[in-house]
Image 1 (tube, rainbow, N blue to C red):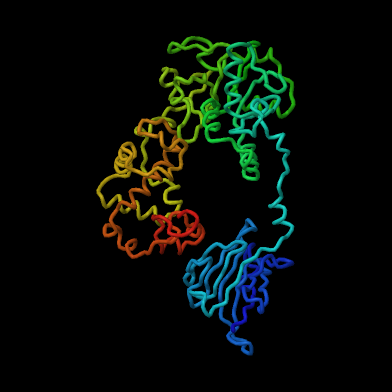
Image 2 (image 1 turned 45 degrees about the horizontal axis):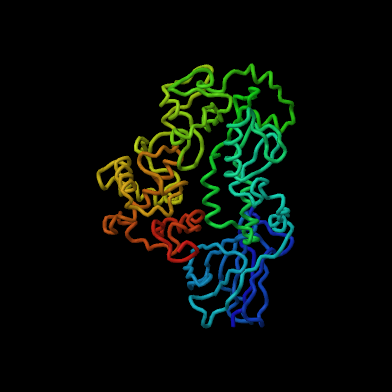
Amino acid sequence: MDMVTSSSTAEVGESSTSKPTSHFWAKLVPLDAQLSDVEICSNEMIVSSQVTSSSQEKHEWCRITRNPDLLTAMMKNKSSNDMLVDDAVVQREDVVEIKCGTEIVLGPNREGYLSYKFKLMPGPKTCKRQLKICVDVEHAKCSICLNIWHDVVTIAPCLHNFCNGCFSEWLKRSQKKHSSVLCPQCRAVVQFAGRNHFLRNIEEDILRADPSLRRSNEEVALIDSYATIRSNLVIRSGRGIQRKRAQAFLDEVLDNEEYDSQESDDAGPQCPQCGSEIGGFQCNQHTIHLQCQVCGGMMPSRADMSELQHCMGCDRTFCGAYWHAQMVTRSDFYPVCNNEIFRPISEHTITGIPFLAHEMNRHEQDITERCIRQTGRTLQEVVAEWIRKLNNREIDRTRMPLNHAERITAATHVCSTCYEKLVSFLLYWFRISIPKYLLPPDALQREDCWYGYACRTQHHNEEHARKRNHVCRPTRGANV
């Protein structure tokens, strides 16, 4: 039976990832209890097997390289045989990611070959990364509904947290009855409200740890129907407390500076419609304002024109389309962004393959570009055709990387970033619709990667990205 040992590669010391550590950070644990563990002491090591117990001749088996996240590693097959990694065949010179618990078989099948489990050893750095924050569940509850937060929002300056739907209803009712919006918990005047993505992660962790705290699907649907806070809101009170920039206000809160309401009164209106009626609308003392993500300018939050204010793909706020509809242009007093940044999908244009296309695999992008040239059409013409297919619901939207995917049509307003994500999604469908015999000769000869578009190896292994087709559905892994 072969004996497995480990040895540092010749490249040790030539790169920062190859420096040896003072202790072994991982080991290969044999499934045969009679064999010894193989300790991995360097950030990059070659594991070898002796041909016989009396011979010094060794056959290289694999190279294991520690990843920067300290929780995974890359394994390259250096043997003359195929290997099994979690029952997936890894061919010679192929690279796969391994993690704690990954099973590795030295040959193409389990019969007659040694099997090992890859095990990470606890160390100072890994322990630090695995540190968990303890949160009292009672401190993660909305004081309005008394349940765990759902789509949590934070208000300022008191920094209390509530469900989006709960606080949206409170905001709506308060503006009808009172000159100022007060915090439901401490009764401080609310001047700012925004979604808190960090606390949303904590909310999800709590519900995973204790599923009994989850609400029913009906309750979630109901509270989502009340939610109106999609971007950061600056809330005016009857005393005229206002700011030109929501971020400036947050900075002031965090710096514990005193807020001078008299200075705010002198700061002038927040937006053009604060000072005068434009397009049949004028802001009043209860109007909530949105801040544009591009120019920082302010505009009134209007439910009747929400599609002209929020990108459907990312829920961010843009003012160009709204002010263009109001025929308001940029001035020295009011910033207004270019309406070309945020407009209907059918009005966007594109001249080159997006960087995000095909999971940023430049080899696949090049093949797609050649396929388009072969059709005699431009990229814009191909994209327009697939937008029509999208509009006619001829495309499965499951993997569309945009929010509200089922509601998106050619007339939907999206920002430039979301448009490029949409184009990348459509180019995947364009590629898989092409008959194989119409692909370029070098692409025609490639085999499909088992992990398809979800393959992680294509991001760090140039050879694998080039020699396997990744514009295909996964046949193995978590994305099957």
